Length: 252
Image (cartoon, rainbow, N blue to C red; front, side, top):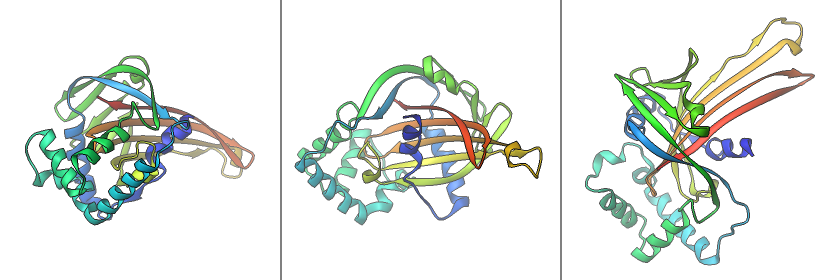
């Protein structure tokens, strides 16, 4: 289940082309999304028992068609520069871009409400984000305390975990059809692979370490998701044995 949750965020992604522009955009967007203060966070998991109705499938098909015609406007992380106003006004602009009636828009909001469809909310905690200069620190309760050992350097655009620098990897777009939230998202992803081999002639001396940090934003719902994963292990024969530890939640 932990692996499923991790890949819910990262497995179905496709990269944006310009890496340098993406790096600059990622640091700017994370500054906007991870706002200092205390936040309620929700833990979630996929709910295989909830199925889409024929009407919901038709609505998603209409949204997919509109997204294919307006992908850059809806999913481009820089699109917010061209719109202003209240959150309701911005979302209404999105509704018009998707060519949805107000009734269809409400149905889409219900469909992408994590408390109602495809996602099971199974717990809550709090997360405090503390800004000291360009460094963001995290203090969480319960499972969210798994982020306490992480901080984020906005100036250098890297996540840090126990003196390990986790560099920016890329920005990824997640289509609505590829995740249980049924809504598109934009993920700012950071990754570090740190592997060592004490004996170059013996594969069993290979030690594997991987660290992932990601912030994902859902433009249609305004929700932000945070994920942090560490995975360490060793080779066992020809196959690696990894022990992952994953913290993932939605910020209210």
